[in-house]
Structures are given as structure tokens and as C-alpha cells.
Image 1 (cartoon, each protein chain N blue to C red):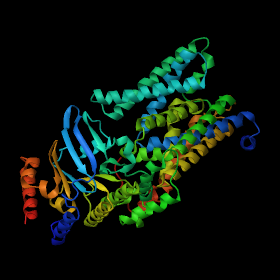
Image 2: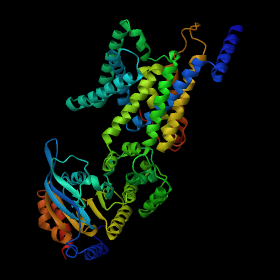
Image 3: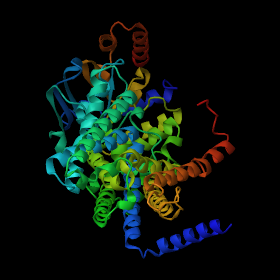
Image 4: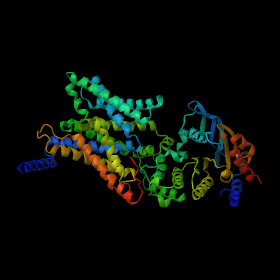
Length: 316
Length: 277
């Protein structure tokens, strides 16, 4: 089977080249997704813990129309403008959910589903408008829906790196405030802390990770990078600090593994131009980490709970 | 469990320790002036005017929906006040936040949160630490000490959701102790706790009073009000009566507070009868 051996040889050679980080492009992609996985994993913990995972998804989807609106106004690909647009539309999406709940009889889960679909639809319509315009190609919006990690350029990686440093830095600085706010909101209020501002800050951090993650994993999957690492980490620990650290590491490893796989796996069609999609592979790596954690983690994992007789099989 | 002979002795002792006349000039801990609070235009508190003296154990008593918790929250600035003012030790809340400790109702917390008992108690140090600073060795030592005072030192590393209701309540009391406040506001600390916890909490409340702290507690067990507290606020949306226990906790006042609710009225009458001799 000379063919297979050949494929294996190329794979190993690719892997070796990848791990040696000699190729500048590979270095860019790996660095970018690693920083993204770390930051998204850390920030996502707060979305999970506050049971706001779905709202996080709505905010992530609202980033697409937000970015389009920013492009309409600025006319070029500017990270700061995209970030601002995503933030404004993320806030709009959250406000829409609140408004639907307050003024109609629709429940929260349905309200969020409505908002996700509507904002995403709006984003897709607007981005096709932009791409049909002559200057549209500059925006690179076509890659934002599912992400195109391979086409990530050095400036993208740099933006992600800066976002990651800022996001993780803010979480470290405000660790105890965010902890108290998430655990016991009334307590945070009695301390005289600006709880609404802290809420907005958490939302801004989520938006920052979303916008940073768009070139790599796209608007549809970026929420998985926010939520899955935290959910996996929670299985291993009962301490918030450890959970944040683990979630960051799981996010980072999943991102690096997914990117490495997509760069080295033999192309499914045999042609070099259509390789494996990076974003989905990253998310699948994260999902695998979650599965392993949920089943094997001591204490909160399925097996150890079955052993302790602490789990009753509920019909799904 | 509440009307045993030694408890009435304690209640007499408590009254002797803090006779209302001897401290008539004592400082005012909380002054609630003409406060009205409404949810969705329905008044929950109506024009409430209360003066709570310092260094007392104060019970807020009234039927369900009387606005007892809302009164605490209005004092703490947790609910918007439609009209009126609140002052604490003669000053507005924002100037004296660090002097106020709060034990919330158990329902307001996420019990599945990744935090252990020690972590909850350490939160009590956050206010004094200020922004960005993390609790250090001193704070950890004090947190353990506060846990010991409520008999929970052995459970320091236990995730908060894996404690019993009474143990959780004691951990939150320890967090309030950690705040080292002068005024403590507690929302039904005795609700659904075991007898050991009830005794532990009462013990801590008395220690607090003996070192000059003021404790204001929402309480709904009429039978133990007299044994545990020395000052009472009776309310039902409006203030009915407030003052030293022996002057205010009377049959007539209780009837006005619980008016129309027969079973509660019986309970109240019984409590008054027991206290009468």
C-alpha cells in the first residue's frame, strides 16, 4: 500500500514542520487560536456560571450585523470599529430579549431563539450586501460566518493576542468582584459596587472574544469556545480559580489541537486547496474534552457519580 | 423547643441586661423616615417611620407579604425607594456601607457555584480590601476564626451546596461577622434551620450585642420573639408599632398586625399568654 504510506509520511512531515513552528503562517495561526482559546475559555466561565450561555450565543450572533454596520460606517476592516459594532449590537440583542420577555408572553428560551435567528439573518443579509459592493472584498466578511483560520494574517493574530491579554488581565484584576457578583448579586450591591457596569463589562469581554474569534472560528461556532471549556472545567473542580485556569488551558489546547489537525490531516478531497475546516475541528476538540470530563472526572463525572449511587438515570 | 423554662430566664436576663429606660439616650442605629416602596405600583411599604436604637437585638415581625424583607432591602439600598429617606448612624448609606453587614435569604444565592465555605466567608473581607486587592493570609486566618465562631470550621473546604440548610445559614452568618460591621441586617436567619443552628445563631447574636453591635432580624416565629430579641418592630405594609419588647409586644398590637388571620392570631395570643405571667 505505497499510497497510504505516502500519506502517512506527508502527515508526519507536516506535523514535524508544524511543531517546529518554522513556517511563519502556521506560527501566526497557532498563536492566534491559542490566545483565543485561552481568553474565551476564561471569560466563558462567567457566562456559564450565570446561566447566561444562551444569551452569550445571542450576543455572539448579533456580532455579525454589528460588524456589518461598522463596515458601512467606517468602510474598512478596522478591529476597533468591528468591536464597537459588535458591542452595540450585542447590547441591542440582550435588550431585545429583555423586551420580548417584558412585553409579550413569550418565555426566555423562545425569546433568545427569536433573537439569535433574527440578528443572524440580518447579519447574513447585510454581509451579502457588502460583498456585492466593489470595496466589499476588503471586509473579508465571507469568512466570518464559519471562520477561516488558515487565512488569518499576522495583524489578526496580533489583535487576538492583545484582546486575550486585556481580557485575562481584567478578569484577574476584578477576580473577587466578578466572583461575588456571580455568586451573590445582592451582596455585591450591598458593597456599593456598580453591578450594572460590571454586568456590561462581562458582556464587553464576551463581545471582545467573539470579535477576536470571528476570523478563526466564525460567528456560529465562537460561542462553543466560550461555553464548552468552562463546562468541562467545572467537572474537575469546586473552586472558581481552578475552574478559570482549567477552562483557559482546555480552550487553549483544543484550539491548538484543532488548528494543528486541520493543517496536517490529509485533505479529504485530495486537493490541497480544500483542507479541513479549522473552526469546526477546534470546537470538536473542545467537545471531546468536555465528553471526557463529564464522564471521567472524579467527583462530578458520570462514572464516579454512578459508583457513589448519586445519579438516577432520568429519561431525557 | 422554644418555650422551655431556661429560655424565659434568658429572656428576662436579656431585658435586665438592656433595660429600655437606661439606654433611652443611646445612639440611633437606623432611622427610616416616611419610606414608601412599591413594586409595579402596588405599595409594599407605606409611609414607614422607624427609629431603631443601637446595641439592641431587633426583630421585625409581621405576616407574610408585610414588607419585612423589603424594609431590610430599603435600608440596604437594594430596592428603589419611592419616597422617604434612610440614615444609618445618622449618615446616608453610601458613607457607612462598611459598617453594615447583611445575611440574605437563602433563596437569593446560586448554591451550585464553585465556592467553598471559606471562600464565602472571605467575601466578607472584600468591602474593606477595596478594588483589585486579593484577600491574604490575615484575611484567611480571620475567616477561619469567623467559621469557628459559628461552629463551622470543620467544613471550611466543603462546597457550599453540599452543606445542610442550617450549615449554609451559619456560613453566611460567618461572612457577616467577617465584615466586622456595626449594624447587621438578617433576613430570616432562623428559617428552616435545625435546633443546633438556631442555638448557635442566638449565641452569636448575643455576643454581637455584648460588644455593642446592632442586629436587625426579620423573624416570623412569634413564639421565640421574646426570648431572642429585646426590641421589636411590628409591621404590615404600614408600621403598626415599634419599641422595647415589653412595651410593644402586646396582644392588642399583634391583633392589629395580623388582623383577620385567625390561625396566626391564635398563635399570637398564645405567645402573649405565655409571656404574660
